[in-house]
Length: 495
Image 1 (cartoon, rainbow, N blue to C red):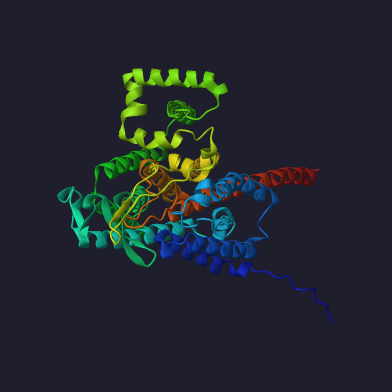
Image 2: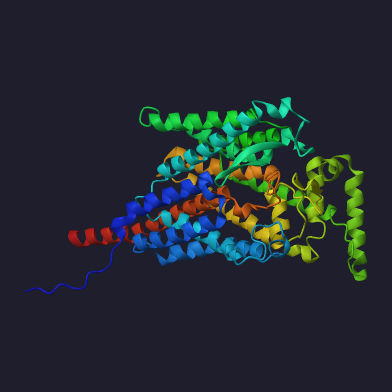
């Protein structure tokens, strides 16, 4: 009688079930179900454990090293955000002095790991995942759109511009700055900037229309057409000047992605163009940051530095173009206050500010000590400090590099690649000038970008692309010795 060895535990047969659960988690987060970062974090931690169980045989040590390289800036950003003066001292922050702050780095890292490890599951279909993400987002946009239109009617931002609602005899903020949004399981008055974020990201679905093969995937084509039409309706029937500007930025970015994908351009030329643009943006940011330093309270020994920066500020003010760019336009006025002192005081580790809010039941209005900028680039300085903002930018650079390599992968479907790039770019382009981390009209709760469900989806897509690139690289290395072995074998047979 033959003896049988101990049977090893093998959960790989459950890969399809885990892949389905991951799609559900992506749908929950895209839809904003529960509107709870802690809930999302716990879900992602559970998913990491399940994915490891069903795919640990395929996970390579060099792949884990690649994951660690990506997770490093994300974890540092999360830790700096959780330990910033903003998180520990700002009473309007939902995690104010809370043990739940541990979920900021933990939640971001675990959801990033989900994206990377999902690339190891053969049953995980990116095409289905994107359809689920866009479908859930479309449902959320539709609900908000219907609620807002029922309350105010089409084009209310134009028809009722300057009008206010009255609560207990006190006027609310003007109607053209308001909308309705589903927050968790109830509706609330939210800012028009927050409302418009979701249809602006959904608008990136228009990229799929040119690449989906209608004969083979008719339902998919119809779905993405419906998503794009819904996004346009939700944006333009509640449009304002600032949301129009951010929507134009999104559309221009999507056009650039479409051109890069469809038109055969010289790769070196494109690379140098983007490097040049990046350098110009970097130089402009440095100039703007220096121009924003008033240096109040600096030590007397810094008089030389004060003098140099004062002369630089006088130069900027004396040049009509630079003065317009860095001083007198509406956007620059938002950012100057946040940059002043962020490099040489305790503000380098986050700000403390009293959030403004209007409370109809009390009949009082609380004023800002400093206003948020509505830009992820500058609000990260407020919530995570200058070092946190730097690591956030490093994360974006690594993430976009992964997406560019992923788009060059011929094995992936064309419209999945362009949709990944479109979704991520739409979110960050809109949020560059219009991410409202104080979205509630009648509440003072603050929601920084790292608590955003859409940001978590972007992190997932970054890491999925990174994981696919790592797998392709590992497969290429694995094939090289096989080819050499075949040649040696043939020579031996000939002899």
